[in-house]
Length: 222
Image (cartoon, rainbow, N blue to C red; front, side):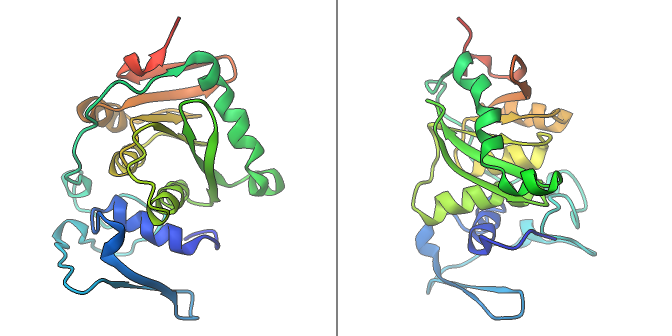
């Protein structure tokens, strides 16, 4: 299930997040077939290892775990973030939820849709996308950056309007994003994964407060 719109970004972001492809030149073209489907043609000579993407049963595009038989099955082999040099100050961090909310026109109309936004460390919103599925919203912003040739996003922050799940933190890692923030709670798996992958994980980000669960050094506290 998805919210229609920015479908090429959604597809590209999913391919990156699932480690099916790593480079823009691996895709020859993305086209719609007129039946609510996208066809992605890979470049000549591209070889894929699809075992890690195998799923069983009924799945939906907005579910990160659906069809996977174990937690290990959803882990991808992305390298950990190398540096802690990217930092954001508290005032900038606290300003981000309102900036994302201002970009959520669908949420303002419905009150029931997720959003994801990519910010630089100066607090400038680079891209925001909305979707009924929070994983889809993340795939769309990552897919946008991928198609624009902007990966890795190694001096940026991902903000999501809901919870911080393991899958969302891993998607951020796939895009090289060192800081992940969420308006709501993190899962235990997300916290553990962020610590392993050298990502800063922030949750319960509200106008006056937040919690840091991993790698606090990227937040300038004073």
